[in-house]
Amino acid sequence: MSILEEISDNLQHGKAKAVKELVQQAVDEGIPPETVLKEGMLPGMNIIGEKFKNNEVYVPEVLVAARAMNMGAQVLKPYLEKAGVKAVGKVCLGTVQGDLHDIGKNLVKMMLEGKGLEVIDLGVDVSPDTFVNTAVEQNCQIICCSALLTTTMGVMGEVVKKAEEAGIRDKVKIMIGGAPVSQAFCDQIGADCYTPDAASCADAAVQFCLAMQ
Amino acid sequence: MKSRERFTAVFNNTLPDDRLPAIEWASWWWDRTIMEWQKQGLPDTLGFHDVAPYLKLDQHYQFWFPHRRSDCPQPAFNGGPIAEDEEEYEKILPYLYPLEEAEAHIEVMKTLKAGHDNGDYPVWFSLDGGFWFPRTILGIENHLYSFYDQPELYHRMLDDLADFQLKLLEKMYAVITPDFMTFGEDMSYNNGPMISEDSFDEFLLPYYEKIVPYIKAHGTKVIVDTDGDVSKMIPWLMRAGIEGVLPLERQAGVDVVALRELYPKFIFIGAFDKMTMRRGVDDMRGEFERLLPVMKTGGFIPSCDHQTPPDVPLERYRIYVEMLKEYAEKAVKG
Image 1 (cartoon, chains in turn green, red):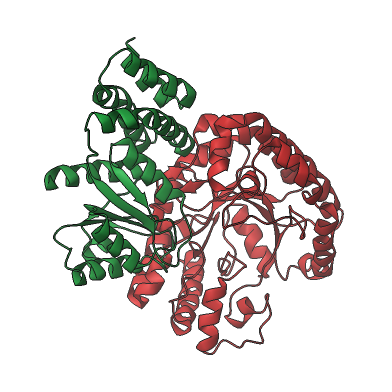
Image 2 (image 1 turned 45 degrees about the vertical axis):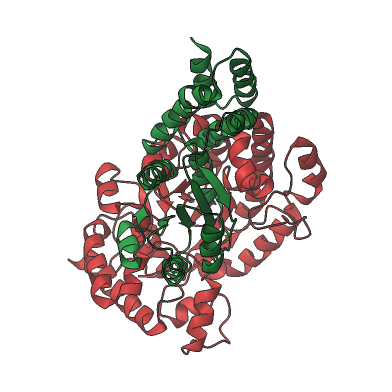
């Protein structure tokens, strides 16, 4: 097994310490940081994401894998910056105003980062203004809104309206998700994309960012 | 037929003589819904247990035993941890498993015994389950990591939990024999189980195997309360001796009609898509029509598939109750 395969395998099994050490070893051995990312870490997260979509692994397995990914990414970050490697895109993410549930949002964040996207986590109870202002100030390509409650999902529609008012609707994709949200609701409020799970969200976000490059 | 007899009939996979029970399974109405309805004419003088009979639903009494003392330290934020590791668990142990506070509930149950024995209403109790309880202690996210990071602590917590629950159940059964019970779990979400079958078997199954046979030996039906899509978990739960599930959330994709085909004797409570209550009368009727074939099979109590949302007007809810009773009768009379 090559060191890149080892990184992928350990990442899939959530072995954060091993991933961190292997990433450092790979860099020390002269493997370009972008190669470590694209041929070691990202394939590992992709496999976990696919398995998660297919209910072959579950939330704890995704969390420990994503944690391993983040540990490896911390090691790799300065090398990537030095090599001039940029993130695939930038996303601001949060649970909408009135809603304090964040486990789904956190899963999405980990999956997005696992796909090489830069994520600005706005936390929970995020107002439509905050979503839109952050997207403007930080040049985000994507706004991701999460809601668990039927009573708060309506805020997502306000995010769409605020983005229109701010004149950024053609520059930013608005993605929505969470237990009460559906494709029909996405269509109704004029958002760009609904995904049923965190892994699908990350896949779609990458596609949007690549299309906008 | 008396109210309790209706429940008993359904739990035995038969049909009552007159109609199915008509209940809102969640005895704790959403406070926001109650506040909205009070603006629309619901008397604000109604006590906790007065709302169901006022709305012409069948009375039932739920007791959720406390698992933490009322003075137990609280999480710093919603879903946050009280204890994150074994050392912190040791520190809060004096606040956990409060038998005296649980006994206070049993004293209240005592006051309902005469009516219960007389068949006027069913009584049920709820316990924090092996997924739920550690989550309240460790916090939502840390709890999910704990299956990998702190398996020994998880096992220890469930051993302690089972010991506590067996002690309190012994005291309760000396006083009253409830008709059914729920393990509060919420271990599924809109995409299915939150944990794997392997994790379920390693952590939760041994816990259930300690408690469930004791409860069933007293004739109390054992049901798991887990929001989201429980479909995939049902065989796991059956292996643990569980006899039913609620609330079967339609929004999460649960299809009680398909589940009934797969599990002819499993008890189902809930399954009525609450979103139809927001959309209007025609949608509600359509939803009852969807459920009617399952209602006719016994072992199913139709009820809102979680709590009624606050934006359902009181007047529409009254129509819902009328319709619920109409179909509850139709189910048994053809």
